[in-house]
Length: 205
Image (cartoon, rainbow, N blue to C red; front, side, top):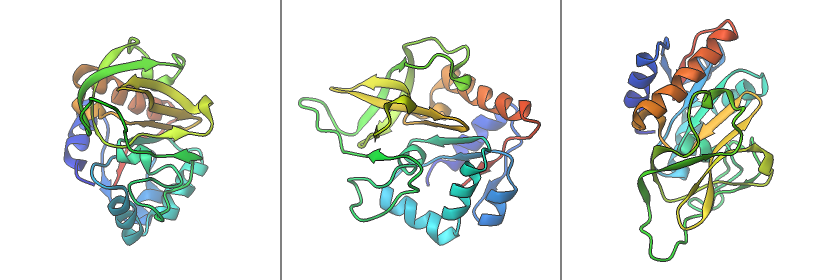
């Protein structure tokens, strides 16, 4: 959904062996998956269904393999979004995806903002200082039911969840591929994490 090439280039820069796939066979054969996305929730889920990868992504995560969601790739992990009522997400996390309602602030939330690290033990945040600046472009944000999965937050009129981590699943509301040195460090950590598992990192559409 929109930014595959920029994510691909960023992953290659930190040493990943990247392959863009768009079918269930490609997802199942991957050692690790990165699900990026910009645009609308409904369009994203429709595209995943059209490619036949919805169940494959769920099975991949449930198998315990490394997974990284970016922006819409984070929101799609939840059950649904206010942006597309009635359209189911992947349902891997319980919670809502509401639209920003912030007085005096522009929506979408666009530009650089601080990442407040809530779980400094997160492997993909190794070497990334608290309150590092990262790059955002979004009008909706995730509100997980289980607060223990919140790995990082950001303030934009409200303090919202900007990163989650549970077991093998990592996901960011911000764009690591646009966040310069900090974002590259996060992607490098994900690739190294994958390599320590004895596998190579690959990307899914």
